[in-house]
Length: 243
Image (tube, rainbow, N blue to C red):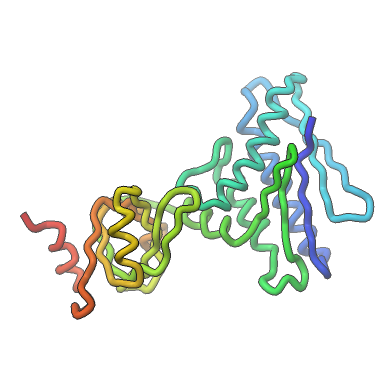
């Protein structure tokens, strides 16, 4: 049975950062482990440390002795981290709020200059998942949604990616906050032509607990001409209400 391995690299790994990394790793494997087993089964994680390194090994042992759940847990953990790194728009299989929050905490342990912790990797079965700020951004998009409603947002389109699904980001004209825009590839040409331009997008908006738009599933997109002034809220809504 393959272990799940946490590898921490850095020139000056402090005790505090090491403790936080290990605790977040334990939260991650425990949460996913609970989700992959059936009600009458459970996983116990056997922990070991490689001598002279910052590598933590976690080997699952099923209460029932069923190797299926052990294998499923190790695979789900690494696949889930890789999915969050890729910018997925949905929770990875067997991941709940606690698991994705644990991945976010792991990523936040890294410092931008790499003075203390330069990289964190979760691996199993020969597959490595580097934990970076990409995962932080994905988790922020996935959690904290309080409500959704149909509406429109105007802003400048400054980011386009096809990692984990095609989407782009606009910076809201009203708040200057980044809003992720999930869109079908059928709209690829329109999105690419709108790069660095002001746009209005219409669809299902996901708001966080502070009533800030975090993500929108785009149904329509309107590109403003360069000579246009920034649109008012009423004019943006009007774009999608004309008969």
